Length: 151
Image: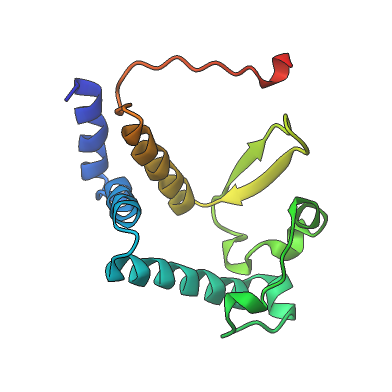
């Protein structure tokens, strides 16, 4: 283990293992897709997401979706989200410190969503897990090239 990796995970441990917990859950679910625990975890996440959306997001509240399955939810796209952005923001997150996550639009339309700290941690854990699968470990030197704008 390199010192950067050790330091990274030590800092997470000091902060309450928030990232490690997400990482371990992602790892378990990806590596055990047919396990009943995976079904339990993913079902709980989906139920929590639908309950939150139907009780806190004005667009879904107006659709009267509380307690309904995902099949009842309308399919929406980026254009709809951009056109109805304020109606798609959760009421209980308006006062939270949210971060903008943007795409440049290099392969289409630029897009922006808001993420809370928990979502950012989950996204980071996801990136670390799949980077590990590809042989990259936190702390390895990395060179990143962005070529989209060149074409």
